[in-house]
Image 1 (cartoon, rainbow, N blue to C red):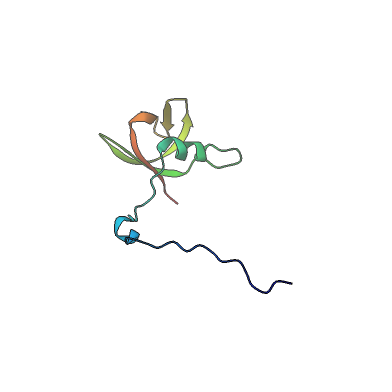
Image 2 (image 1 turned 90 degrees about the vertical axis):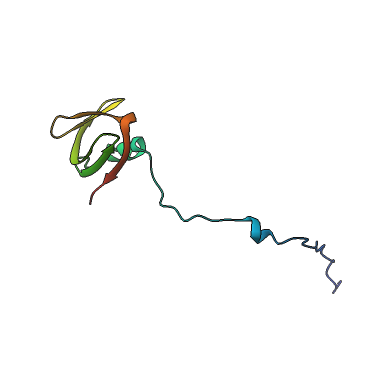
Length: 91
């Protein structure tokens, strides 16, 4: 049996690659459509308090319904999903 292992190629590093790499620790922001789809999953309570931020307004309310392009809040406000900048579930 052969006791010697085959030689492995070792290339040389000509420059420091760490100088060209940057890492930004940013908070992950989910799209409003994804959050709304999570709220309306089967066997999931969707009447939770949410914070909705649009270009003109900011409110804390409950979402009670949705269509393809709009959501309906508990105080009968109809908000277009594309106008929502941020939607967070308040636990």
